[in-house]
Amino acid sequence: MQKILVSGGAGFIGSHTVLELLSAGYKVIVFDNLSNSNRESLERVQKLSGRTIEFHKIDLLDKESLGKLFRDQRFDAVIHFAGLKAVGESVEKPLLYYQNNVAGTLNLCECMIEAGLKQLVFSSSATVYGDPESSPIPEENPLKAVNPYGATKLIIENILRDLYQSDPEWKIALLRYFNPVGAHESGEIGEDPNGIPNNLMPFVTQVAVGQREKLRVFGNDYPTKDGTGVRDYIHVKDLAKGHLKALEKISGEKGLHVYNLGTGSGSSVIEVINAFEKATGLKIPYEITERRPGDAATCFADVSKAKRELGWSTEKDLYDMCRDAWNWQQKNPDGYPH
Ligand code: NAD
Ligand code: UFG
Image 1 (cartoon, rainbow, N blue to C red):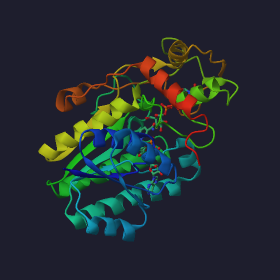
Image 2: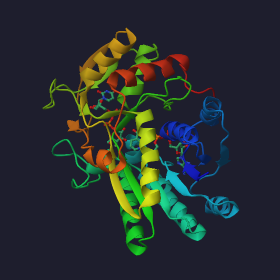
Image 3: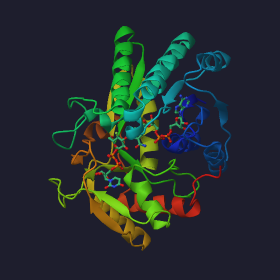
């Protein structure tokens, strides 16, 4: 049985991926400092899967403890989710982001080298495309950081590329996620943002559950179908499955492989609201406000490479994403119990 070490596995995408890994028969070891997550997510994954997860509360920056984890047992691969991800916070606290995400990843890579382990799947982001000139965006598009969070992803991608150049034994997948939303269909695990959500879907579900009065739609004068921003929303379960395909790919092939993970089609904010209303039978009150600084008009993926090389494509549509996000929110109006 292959043993996979998952960093940040208690978080939103990590917990869903851990569940898919367990269902596929992998043994999973998670470490997380729980700075943006809750141990309860993994308890629930254990219940859903009927399998146990070995958990270690370790910070990426604590190289002593991380090194010990790698000395105590052998892993077949690492999936690296751990990182801070709030764009606004990264502008206010850039050093925190560089320290946590970049220095943390350096520690992880050093521990892997000491342990002789060279298989890594990394959570990158569509943010590395900056403000894209056109969509769909292929992997070869020029890359650009437009905020410190995005810079950390770009720097880490470059570090991993250099690492592969230095030692072609490495097997690395850089997965560029578009906009992950939704939740497991059980409603037991989902996205549990701290404070006021920055992202559209959790804001919509919090309006629906009565925690927020109305949604603000950031601008309706973009050059898009209805003037509102267009994004490639991807169901977190489809995204989780993409990680298993990436693991399979790299286990059989050395190299540095880059994949967009999205649906390949864009939805506007108004389309998300309409889909949510249709999926739930609820009305989402909203007002149009100013554009949010730094937002692109349109961003969606060219997913042909992932389809061709990984044999992966999404199965769930916007309706499923809205239904499942709402199911999770309804069952857990305040997120995981703290
Ligand atoms: P999340 O915050 O739910 O999960 C990240 C996890 O990493 C959390 O459990 C957090 O406690 C942990 N963590 C953070 N810093 C750590 C550290 N120093 N040591 C140990 N653990 C640490 O976020 P998510 O949405 O699940 O995102 C997972 C990854 O995917 C992140 O790297 C994120 O940047 C990336 N990503 C997310 C999105 C998105 O919209 N959700 C889009 C593109 C890329
Ligand atoms: N939006 C609103 N109102 C809100 C929140 C968002 O109208 O309250 C709009 C935005 O203007 C945008 C769309 O909904 O048009 C999606 O916004 P999100 O914040 O959900 O997602 P973004 O695409 O802006 O950002 C996400 C991640 C970032 C990442 C970026 C690029 O949150 O971390 O994708 O990959 F950098």
